[in-house]
Length: 237
Image (cartoon, helix red, strand yellow):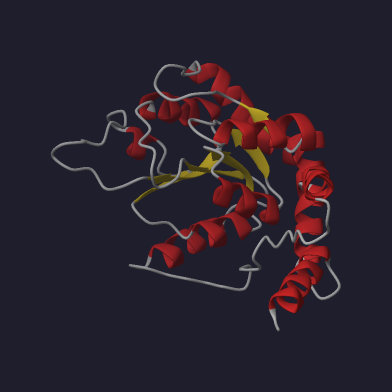
């Protein structure tokens, strides 16, 4: 995924003692807290393959444009799982449109707080991921082979989005920035629909291929497996 940059780093340093390890193979891990994993899995099991968009903007950035995202999901008619940062409090409120959950109850699940992201992304029903482009989320999305809807908000997320959109072709940029740059709900809805319709078109095909390669790389004989062996061998006396 970052081969060009790893090669450049080796050339710049003048040696090959650079190891690219990952993504960590967590596909077999199933973590459940407060029953959320069981509830979501049961709901996803009833959905067609690739028909669900997973929405999560990470654990640090609070998205103030929840209204726009909610309107887009409602207009799209697409099945979704939306992981909000935390449960509403007296200070932060909920900021979802009134009646949103009731109107979308048959095709959507809203999770407040922790979500079993790896398990959700790895489910066959999930075909797209609306993400803030944090590196952990990117690796999990890529390894799952889903189409990515990129909404970078800060720091390295802009560079991560560029890698996904312009170089790898496994993502489409839906917005850039936080509160100062918010898409129209209708435009976001169209991109959500496109990401799951026909399993994401060419972007979906590239995403699934990259996911296949990611899983191969961490198996015995794969590049990441070999790099980890190389690193351990170099570190041991």
